[in-house]
Image 1 (cartoon, rainbow, N blue to C red):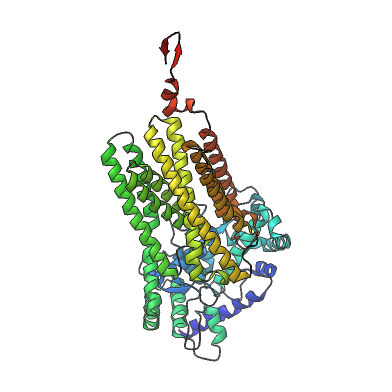
Image 2: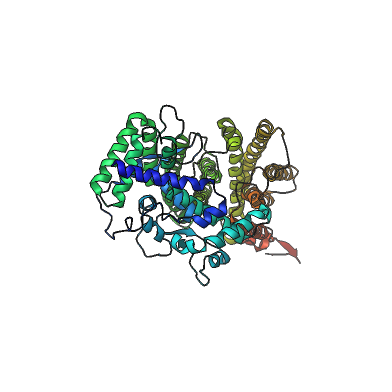
Length: 594
């Protein structure tokens, strides 16, 4: 087995050299590796994957999901999913084959590491722009996922297009150029995997502080003894390549034994994260939120009390599940609940559901349950869409790597987002109930107005305090309290808009309907601060441009403008007020006419 180990690590060392090449050279030479792999020897035999291979054991193995100091340790299965998500944004399915059997991401990763010919056929590179598809020779294809075998002949063209995109200012890049750059990142990621620069699966030794890749092990241990974990991994890869289940299983058991001896905590966290991802609590929460929402709508038509109580019970159970999932994420990441866009969506949904549950326990009218279920469901759907960016618990940038400010400024201002969204949601429900139904009585008008007012007061408090805390953090991190950054402007707009609503209410300028319409516009302001600032691609808070987000953000904005327009329709056209408007009595020749 020493010969096998030597060959694997020599391949790793040869691949390491590409890390020093310019991007265009990486693209031109990607996978052109006749010197690394004997393609005849490594050719796939066509034999089905043996069920005796302990893929489950491999999934549980921890790996460093970053190559920097302090990288987060994640299960190998999670790392495999993240790598595939970044490459294809299409986990668990063979892209381009809608009817084909789902294939676990761990199988894909092992194919990349040990069966290059099989990896050549996996369609994991997502290309959305038609001009980018044409750049790889697929001129009339309506597919979005392609294999490296289809891309490889066009590496020179892609390298040229990549350099052109890199020369363009980031704020002026077209959708085509952004897609080309995304593809180049996918190719470099694939190159890191097949060159053994990734994953980082070898734990640190006595003098080391970071987990290492097989390539790094070879570079640092050329004149010393190779770690036992590296030998176990080389045996795993050799066994997987040869369909040798006994060899593969022995190597997995050996690797786990070595990790358990010195890294029990990492193994425990890896097992917990594997269970967490397999159980999928957020996905189950989506289903339960939908059930609560449907039951609440039903309670407004029939079986009022039983359905309303059942819906509230389901909402509370789902909130407990949502809270438990957030707690596990905090434990696994070692960070407060909000660290990126994905976690902000999860936390905003959680905050809205908490507020809604309190409102429902106070008013008992189904409004809190309905809005809590809908916002919880919708926010988790947004989080699912954002999860395709890669690891949702990734290591933070250095300037953000502070638990105190993440637990104060970020959490507080995110609760301000949640409260503002909730106020707008109640406003939309007020408008739709009044316009389309006869259920908005005078008592309900007063009650919903009080709900909107109370939630906006909370939103004002959290938004203002969170914005001030953000300024203090900025002063400590960048040496200035306020710099008119787009995200800072968005935060202060939320504060100003909530203040405007409160002053209009206190000054008698608006009543229940007016405050409802103004609260709806608060959703537009908050969505701009949350997502819209990223669309500019400038500032210290720009976390990355998302093409699809522009479309959905515009849909959100125009739909809310539509709700505002509906809210300003004269009351005589509202079903809930039509009878009252028609009941105005006028005296005509002494006869009361209605």
